[in-house]
Each structure stands twice: as C-alpha cells, then as structure tokens.
Length: 52
Image 1: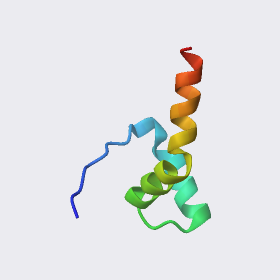
Image 2: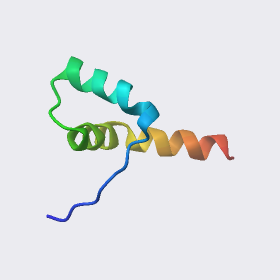
Image 3: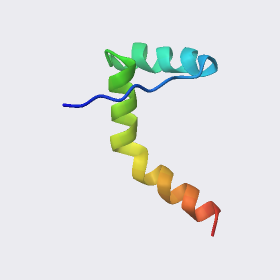
Image 4: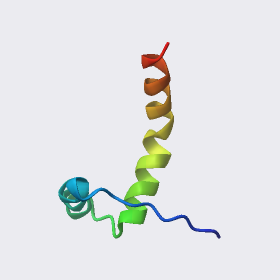
C-alpha cells in the first residue's frame, strides 16, 4: 500500500478535531479518507457545475 501525505491548514484544525471527537474517527488520515470516499464525487460535480 502506498501513502500520500496531506497537509491540513492550521485554520481547519479545530473543525477536524471536533469531527474526530464527535464521530470516533481515530486519525486525520481516516477522516480525510472517509470524506473523500463519501463526498468526493459530489465535490467534483459541484465544482464542475459552477464552471459551466
């Protein structure tokens, strides 16, 4: 399994910590993976729609 490091801007750290605490997610990596898998397609469609 390969890995890629993601850097979280410091201003979003409080929100990320809150999500982790409220959901029981263990790591920022897991949080990012869950958000990517569950909302990635929606994000892409939304961004493409705003440029058409």
